[in-house]
Structures are given as structure tokens and as C-alpha cells.
Image (tube, rainbow, N blue to C red):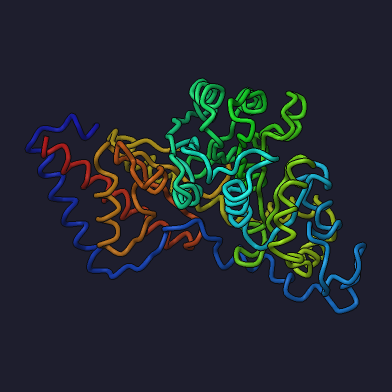
Amino acid sequence: MELSALSHAELTAFYDDCKAAYADYQAQGLKLDMSRGKPSPKQLDLSADLLTCLTNEDMKGESGDYRNYGVLDGIPEAKRLFAPMLGVEPEEVFLFGNASLQAMYFAVSNAFTHGILGNTPWSKLDKVKFLCPVPGYDRHFRITEFFGVEMINIPTNEEGPDMDLVEQYVNSDPAVKGIWCVPQYANPSGIVYSDETVKRFANLKPAAPDFRIFWDNAYCIHHLVDNPKMILPILEEAKKAGNPNIVYEFASTAKITFAGAGVSMMAASRENLADLTRALGCFTISFDKVNQLRHVKFFGGKYENVLAHMKKQQAELAPKFQCVLDTLNKEIRPLGIGQWTEPQGGYFVSYNAMPGTAKRIVQLCKEAGVVLTGAGAAFPYGKDPEDSNIRIAPSYPEVAELQQAMDLFVLCVKMAAAEKLLAE
């Protein structure tokens, strides 16, 4: 029976039972952190051979001795290895350091200081706006907030962002300079943009000539099922639409190999890359070519080996996501007090609680020993207008610990919902 159908007396008894169970959890002294989508130690162990796969004799490659300076845009062996992951040609790839977030920050920073392809630097404009599909990735929003950009919420559904609204803003307002997107297994909802959505992005007619789609393809091969739905390659679609410069695409091996020592990459048109490389040539002489080479050697230079490696990651992650979904389906669905996504890949489950209860749920979990991502983090400025969304990150704990955390989570969901209903 749905919780809202209970009488006041029944609801009070339900809440009292929840409080008693909650006190038991508090007495257990749990200390579980599910605040970020971190790979587990077992996932990291899958790449242990990265540490020993190179010898001194391996250091000379197609572009010289990789222990030395030079090769600003990344070694050609690694560009060929990772280009298929992004659906682009090797010449359209620039390899950065260990985090794609650095590349995204750099692209925004350079637009502010020097402009894009000869257009006015954003710092000299009265107003700069970014569209932000929500719920979204908090670190995207942190970058644009840091630069004083006005962020505009764009609702999403199972097809992706509301493209009618995106087109309305982009095609009519020259102050709209960008949009954040996680198109394959969106963070945190796990949705995959439909073919129509990708094509509509590629066919945008921006009022601003320096508008860019920041296409963060972080989870492009992070599948939880064997026959996943895949997005269309955005750069290819942009070329077909006569918009080759409209997109910057980003990815990394952070959740493929080592989260703290991966290889990040940016894909864009040759014209965009040439424009950015002017600044990058002042920023550094080269990124970590030895690490790039290490990845090439670890994967034998073959993209199919990358995909085979991701099957091992899938085997580690899939049972954890199933644990989350099974618990929610068993404990919450009959009560009608929440909705959630059931992603086929990525790192998160997006949970929507009864409006006005997300912060309370996170607080209750924390006070009983389970740390979650802060309520509201998936929205610009940390402000969820419904106080409803919570990002669940199942990857790090072992399944037994995760089950403990989920049992506590659903209990806190029940408590917060009962409190709200009793107050009404």
C-alpha cells in the first residue's frame, strides 16, 4: 500500500517503527562513503600491469624518445588507440593529462581570456550564459560558476535535454555561449541521448558564432549490459550539418584504468584544435607522454583490448547496480514515495524522492554513518528547486557494504516521507 494512503494513526505507527530501526543503525557505527563515483580497489587492480608494462627500451616511439620534451598534442600511437572511443579521426584528438576536467576548464578559461576563433573574449562581454541539463554533473557547474557564468536549468527526459528549449535559447540569444552535456549514461540519470537529440544538437543555429557544445563523453564505453544503446558520433553529425566547429568532445581513461593517473582527451575540429593549441603551447611543452605510452603498451595498441578490459569492469559494477535497484524496487516502489533511473551504464543511479525531502534523507544517512553526495549537487548553484534529487554512487563499496548502505538509505527515505506526510 502507498504510504500516502495510510491513516494518521497508521502513519504514526509506521514512523515509530522506522525510528526504532534507525536507532539500531546509529548504534552500529557505520562508516561508508558513497559521495563520489570512485572506482573500487578491485576495479583499479584490473589495471595493475600498467605499473610494470614499460621498459626503458620501449620509450622510443613514432615521434621520438617519449622521456623527453615535445609532441604537445599527444603521441600518435595513443591518439590512434583512443580515437575510436570518441568516434573521430586521430587527427581530431588532443591528449591532455590525467583528468578531462582540466581540458574542460582550459577550454572555458581560454574562451574568457582570448576568445574562440577570433571572437570577442568572453571576459569582455556584459553577460555569458550556459545551458545546464539537470540533473547534471556538479563539477561542470562548478567551472562555469567559478567564471561568473549565468547558468540556466534545462530539464531532461529519457531522450536527453529538452531540445525545444535548447534551440529556443541557443538560436535566439547571443549571450548563450555553451551547454554542458553528458550524452552517454548522463551523470547522474544514466540516460542515453537519442539519435534525434544528437542530430538536433548538430543542427543548432547559434546566435553566437562562438557557441560550443561541451560534450563530456565520460562514460562512452562504461556499459552494464551486453548490448547497450550507443549515441551517434557528434563530430560526424556536426560535419554533416555544416557545423564542424560547434562541439568540443571530452573523455578520459579515469574510470578505465587509474582514476588518478589516466589519460584525458579532447576531440574537436582541426580548426578548433589549432585555435586552442596556440594557448596550450604556452601552457606546457607536453603532457605525460610516458603515461600515454604506458596505456598503449597495456592495451597492446588495440581498441578491441580496451573494450575487452571494460567487460571486466562491467563484471565488477553490474552486481552493485543490481543491488541498488533490487533494494529500491522491493522497499520503495510499493510505497509510492520515490522514482529512480535504471541505467544500462555509467556510474550513478538518480533517485527522486518526495519533493522537499532530499536534504533530510541525506542528513539522516550521514548521521547514521553513510555519506552521500549532497542534495542539490546535481543542479547549478547546488539548488534543486524541488529538493528531490539524490545521486547514488554504487561503485566503491563491496556488495555487502553497499547492501548495508542501501538498507539504511531506504529506511531514511521512509522516515523523511513519513515526516512530511505527518506534517501535512
